[in-house]
Length: 328
Ligand code: MN
Ligand code: MN
Image (cartoon, rainbow, N blue to C red; front, top):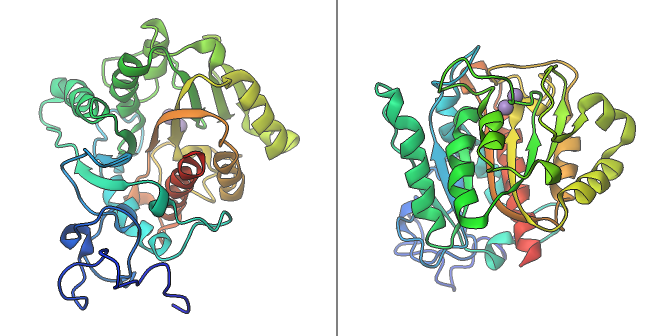
């Protein structure tokens, strides 16, 4: 570290007790700002945010949703929250790029831990995620949810729609996830259900990065991956802005929107996807949207190499937090 001024200010209240002790994820009393801790040691939390059960002073709660019982191909994304937290330590060290902001001086962000889910009783999964999400949203705190497979977005959306009304869905994904269902736990069908139940305002919704076919058109605008490549990031952002407008918007980011070269660690990889830089520029360009929630799903660490996928996921989630800080 050449510049400790933003991370290692022991004169403030950020570090507690003996400054030589790490593990500030649970030692720390102040939820604002950042602090120094070596990237390679200490208790892991997302971006080194303090763990907090009490959300009364938190703007955003990071919540892990470790469930992968709804996948159609490769499993493993129940280990996603853990891997994304581990990969996020590098990003906790410095101010955000390219804004130069410290999002945590502006927003109070805490790690609220993982939702405890019982994989042996699949019938409980949807309700347990929904109730956990509702308990967060009811406090007025926004959620940054780390999956888990994409099915988790259904109970999350339901809880958000109850608080905010029908939502614009901004979905980044190789897949539309609006295919007809084979059964209740399916990560390729939950957005059709959400449309049928009125959780999503289809006229204000956009899917970005698609490169799989569905005969069924549910009326959501889609901007395919080849279109992103042809149009470029700025044109896509302006289309997103036009469709989504300024109403409440839920962002659901399936890591398989990235090309397998940039996100090998995922359950249903599809060639021809976005590069990390395109996805980051798209997220950084969402500052005019009224985003009420965000999930990042489908990171499957057993299929990852050298943290490529979990680092991309952590960076996307970090940059979303920085966008939210920029709006405050
Ligand atoms: Mn997908
Ligand atoms: Mn998906």
